[in-house]
Structure formats: C-alpha cells, structure tokens
Figure 1 (cartoon, rainbow, N blue to C red):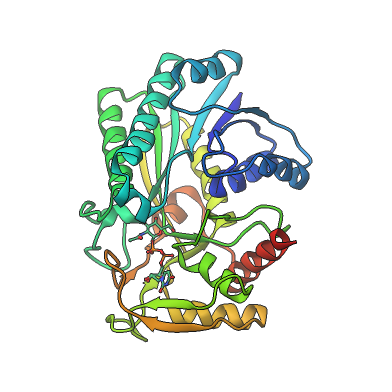
Figure 2 (cartoon, rainbow, N blue to C red):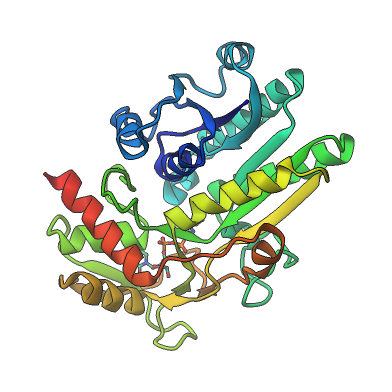
Length: 335
Ligand code: UD1
C-alpha cells in the first residue's frame, strides 16, 4: 500500500517524502511543478537511495488523478499541493480559492470514489487569526484570517469537518504548521521561493549571501520583549516527522478527525532570529527597522502538548540547526 503525496516536489512535501521513504514506506508523488522543480525528485532519491512513482499532473485534473488511483494501491493521502504566497493570494483570490479549495475537493472526491479515507492536511497557524491566547492550543477559536491563502486553509478545515460528520469512516489529521524553516542537512533540498522572498528566514539567508541588500524588520513597536514580531519557527524535518506520526495515528483502529499544532512551543522575535543566524553561521545580516507589515500580528507560538501526548511527537532540532541548515542549502544552490 502506498502513500500518495500531492505536491511532493515542494518544500514540505519533499522533506516528508524523504521521511516516508526512510521509514520504508511506498510513495507515489503527484506534482505539476507550479512552484517546484523536477530536480527535487532526483535529490530525494539521492538522499534516501530509494525510488518512488511519480506523475506530473495537476490535482485539479480529475481524469488523470483517477488514473493514479486506478494504477496504485493507495492507503492514505498527504496533501501538500496548493498555493502559499500570502501577498499573491490577496492579488489573485480566485486562483487561490480555485487551486487550494477546488483542488482539495477533487482530491477528496477521488479518494471517496476509490474508498481511500485516510487524509492528512497541511493547515497553518494562520487559521487562528489574531490568537485568543498565547501559547495557542488547538481549542483556540479559529477565523479572522487576513488573506485568501489563510482563508483557503480555514475553509478546507471546515470542509473536512463536514465530510467527517457526514461519513465517520474517514480518518483525517489536520496539521497546523507554525513557521517552517530550515532544510535537509544534506543541503540537497530546501525552500526555494520564486522571486523576492516574503518570509523571514529565506530573506535572512539571501541577505547573508549578498543576494539582497538588507532585511527590513517590519515594526519594532509590538508588545514583545524587543518590540519585533514573535513566531514559533520549526525545522522542516521535525515538521515532516510529525506527518509520519500523524499517519501512524490514522493507521490505528480508532477513526476520527484530529487537529494538531506542529510547533516547538517557543517564540523568537525577528531580532532574535537575526542574532541566532549570525551566531550559527558567522555571517552578518544587515537590517533596518521599517514600518509594520499589514496583516501581521505581534505574537504567535504554539502549545504543542497535544501532539506530544497523542502522537508521541515533539520538535527535536534547535534554532542553530534551523539557521545552519537554511544557510547550507542556499550555498549549495548558489553553486
Ligand atoms: C506567514 C503567513 C502565514 C504563513 C507563513 C508561512 C502572513 C500574515 N502570514 O507567516 O499565513 O503560513 O508565513 O511560513 O503573512 N518579517 C520581517 N521582515 C521580512 C519578513 C518577515 O520583519 O522581510 C517578520 C514578520 O513581520 C513576522 C516574522 O518576521 O513578525 C515572520 O514573518 P514570516 O516569515 O513572513 O511569517 P508569518 O508572517 O508569521
């Protein structure tokens, strides 16, 4: 029985595929390379010395997707396909809603048709909007998302809840990621945003590499220890391992729909991140204080206890690992 990974050539999908293959799992990847490159698939093979089946298709293409289910014995689906650029989602809401929501619906309908009912969904801490309490638990209120990307995650979560209500033979894990950073320690796979990055860590590494002039720190007047925004940065390999644990949970007898925060439970500010990066790599990160970025919140970090108790998962990697691994990756791709 295989695990179908949609968006398996992407940032989190590729790291999760590595962990699945390392666990001896059979993997089938689909990807349309909308925001990834075919080379990533070779790198996954290089890291794991293992093979997998691959289809270059769009998950909105029902006919082709059905063929994948016809040709393989799929046990569970991990859905990493989807658009994820917050700013772009504000400019192109229809593209985002179509790709993320319609894509998920086509996928779920196809799963239903082939009686595959284990689904792991990549959600985001963004569904908490302006968090009710910090640290954020899974019971905190969701809603109040500030962009179509975030709203698409929220809607898909609701669709999954409704689906489970209608048919309790589904087994669903909703994983709410905090801020994924870092790369595989081999330096062979990592995050490669197209154009100028929006997220903090990819921006920091590009400033250190001399590709961008300086970092703009978006606001130093938040109610935090140094005035800059606080987030829960989590190493992508830890995050990938969380998916394996979630899969194991779905494979146990009890059916259900489960929601987990995947974070470290520790918050770092923008300036903490700059300092940690400089210490971990010995590289200088030039920055200036700029105005706040619209839609940003002051503090966001998780309470990750539920995942520890129910999945036996907790983040292992340090902030130093996150910085060094991000740095190693960009140096490799520069060559
Ligand atoms: C953003 C998205 C979130 C998405 C996540 C993916 C928003 C509102 N949220 O989270 O939906 O799931 O990315 O990782 O966009 N910062 C700077 N300068 C920069 C870039 C960022 O100071 O050039 C600051 C931000 O103000 C924030 C922190 O760094 O305080 C982290 O920002 P970022 O990496 O963009 O992540 P989030 O905004 O937390």
